[in-house]
Length: 140
Image 1 (cartoon, one colour):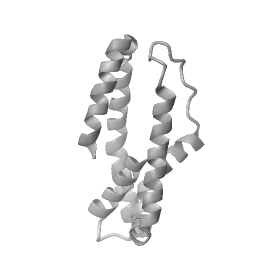
Image 2 (cartoon, helix red, strand yellow; image 1 turned 135 degrees about the horizontal axis):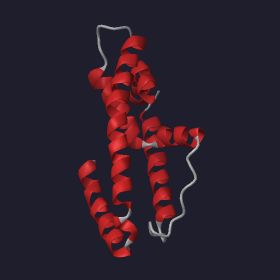
Image 3 (cartoon, rainbow, N blue to C red; image 1 turned 180 degrees about the horizontal axis):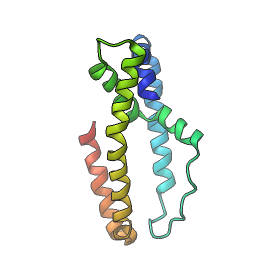
């Protein structure tokens, strides 16, 4: 839905009102800090099974997730077909994004399940967290 709406013109709204984009960026950063704060102190072995995220919580997360906005704006600006109507082109781009994204996200989740047992050792978990944190500057 986010990609579809972006393809229909939300990207132009960000270009016209840069403060809106900056606000989204700050909200996303604050949310990531909140998630990091929630993770402090508990190791994976001690953590309780999380409550499933509700649809509303997932939608709110996507609304402030900077990576999701960058993906949607990139898809809209690079892959939007010029020979189709805006609604049809937006649908095609969003559908292709879903078809490609779903298997990738699924593999990422399966990777998390596969390494969970390895990360029950606090030392190994700390090493993994430091390695992942060290890669963050590379993702910008």
